[in-house]
Image (cartoon, one colour):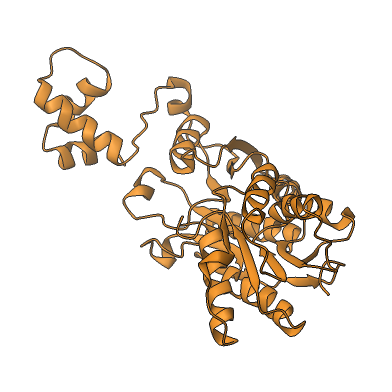
Length: 334
């Protein structure tokens, strides 16, 4: 987005927009409100760095990581960094909290660092065309796609697993072991994130297997954090004991859940089965070893960079890659 776009949307002149952005006093309150409303709506970020404005190009690729404490991203970030370096580019990474705005962060990085492209590692699944007007370089969504937004598939790339099907497969594994009272531990049922997609896969599996979706078996904690999963599971256990299995939507959450179960005298897998999705390294060293559907983390990272650099170099257009998961049998299903 340029100041010409802002002027058109606000119904004012380009010079008026310029004066507002530079905080000049000779602008009416009405015009200023119109301009700032457009700026805020479209996340416009003016580039004030004369040095960067003078550059015609750079070799920088931005990586915006949403969720600073998520161990799932560790191997992916390493793979992305190695692939970017091998391709002759420089990685510029910014980690943000789960409640922060990755689009605003990326737009600021694009202008300040003269990025050639952007990889979003983790993010919301409901981006709109208007939101993405602030991004003027090609971008790839890594570990997620735009399930609930209105982006044209030809305008961006993605690399992820089929989260809905992975959740379905996890529930199916439990069902085949005889489980019928299957609880789900998730971060949000309708939060526009991977959690929502996996919850839909969970419900689809129950319906296909002739089981009711029971609200009493839904544990919603609004976070992927281990500590929050532990606390949420502990609180839920105080009033719910009629279940034989738990599907946690991430390994991180499963680890917190297992601690809560243990403290309540529930033995995994003797009393309750537990399964998750991700395959992070730490869950392989749990006792018992977590049963989970592993995502191909290194492959995700390298494919994201390959997609982006091919687009930057004009070799290919946007593409959407869905990678398979693999089952780690583990020791938490019986």
